[in-house]
Amino acid sequence: MEHIVGLGLACGWSTSQPRERDGSRDTRYAGRHRQRKGSVEDQFRHLIEAVGEDPDREGLCDTPARAAKAFEFLTQGYKQDPVKIVGDAIFESPMDEMVIVRDIELFSMCEHHLLPFLGRCHVGYLPNGRVIGLSKIARIVDVFARRFQIQENLTTQIAQCLMDLISPYGVGVVIEAKHMCMMMRGVEKQNSEMVTSCLLGTFRQSAQTRSEFLNLVHR
Image (spheres, rainbow, N blue to C red):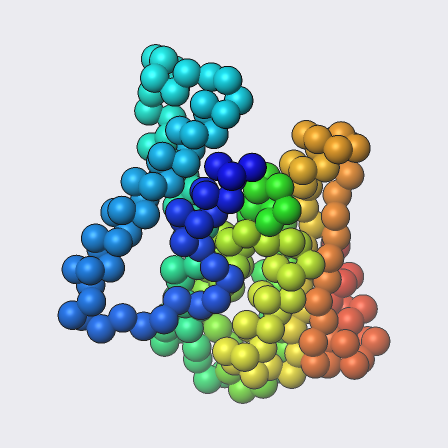
């Protein structure tokens, strides 16, 4: 157990947004980052030893470094700011009909077991004078998915972020995903899928808008 706790502490991951750094701190930050990454490798080595394996044998000798690199990628959303990701890809538009992006592939890490969940995200919004670049919606999904998550919170965070960025009349987000923590352990159900939704603004207030969104998502 202490190795698992140590891994989390070594990673230095938190759910808060990263703070801005001035240029004078970049060198110090880079040094700390290298130290932290090395420490994460050490913790993975300890985990391998804890299950009774030899971390120095041929198949495992490079595993701690690979695993540390993989975890850095899988949790890179902690280092990303959605506002900077979107940049200037917000445009004035007279468009007043629903915009939907379906079947955005996503993967994330269950914060309870550190096992993946994978699925699809459907995002829709009703513009209020502004639209957002198409690819930026998928990037917003990735920013929040590449963190330790539960699906319920992930769904809400994506919807609220889009609401904050472009102030549409409403936003709808639906995620359908399979969770390895349910498939590989516990009840071991291979075909169960979790569906979550978050409806904001007119998507929540208007039954007609809500119905249109859900019908288009599941066509």
